[in-house]
Image (cartoon, rainbow, N blue to C red; front, top):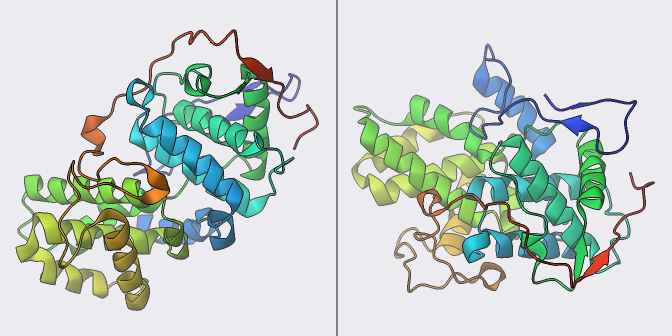
Length: 312
């Protein structure tokens, strides 16, 4: 787990595990779905936080980095980072949020945390800020990381929709479960969830409902013949609200260009969320590489000292 040594300064913590978004628990639970359902309410962002201007600005920066060519980070790092932003803003007001640089500092710190949690190559703090007028140094980013972790009560293993995919596929997907087909449905559902996270309305739905909606949308594309039986299996889950499931499916369809009467977004279909023109299909996980650490050459830029040491 993440640990801190109280005898050291604000950079005195390290991460001792690799976090799998699809398996957020450190040890097997006796009743995995019950444990996930119990935890999801504590990890889901509030609608007001998702609709805030601070979230919009932070999400815009994360999205820019995620789709930023050679700077692009792995989509699950960006996904977890925005989840941290949402959870933080659901619990605490951003210090000095009236400052135009504050949402960016939050986004950078959450990206750094997410990369550490998933043990990918370190994100270059300088590189991801190279187009910005002001730059935050590593010390201030780490200080903000601690502010975020304190707000999250050091519960950095987020329970997201990705954690529910395995349950729905094992419990609800109709036989025969051909592994290549099930894997294709799951992969497409992951792509939809990663893509739709920027949509503010997704905060209206619990992680379990979002997961079910994404899987049904994916099955409709990849394995349409199994969709009716899959829908019936999901409907039999008493914890899935059918109306919320329908509404979430509509939000996914609008955000990702999928569903009845629609075709999956292609390279020629612009994505309008936050104005970033990358298609849902071309934004699949397999297209991404982890951003590499480089020195970035930002010496000529102004450096913003960021938050004072008493933040948090």
